[in-house]
Length: 120
Image (tube, rainbow, N blue to C red; front, side, top):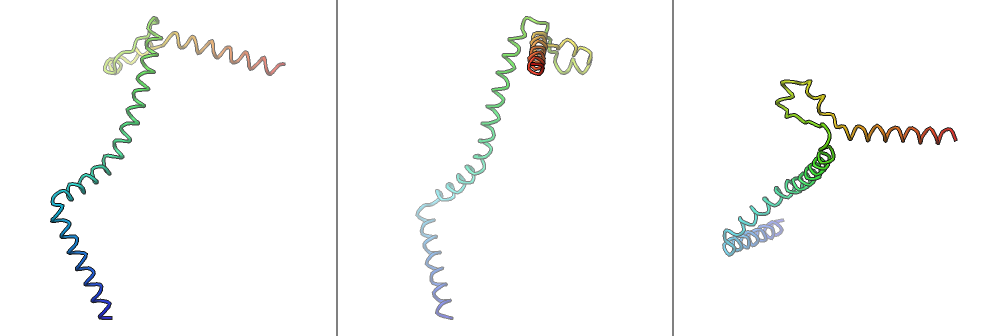
């Protein structure tokens, strides 16, 4: 029993001595390495999420710009939020004419095709 305990303590002393030697040889770079590892672990997930949210945001902005370019000849008027809070009835002017016409015609064609398929 005492021999086993003596071997465990001796092994622990040698390992501690080796650790102290490594710290003295490496110096402050070990702590810098540990801090960098912690920073990579922390920033890895947040950077990953940031990249995907920025790509989605860019995609949505491109769609909005294409929609505004499509509706530029209609009477589409998008007032700012402060104006909408003061006069909520002005939202009636935010009707996209071309889009509504296309949706209406598309729904008519869809209903006609479905009725045509049902009665044949």
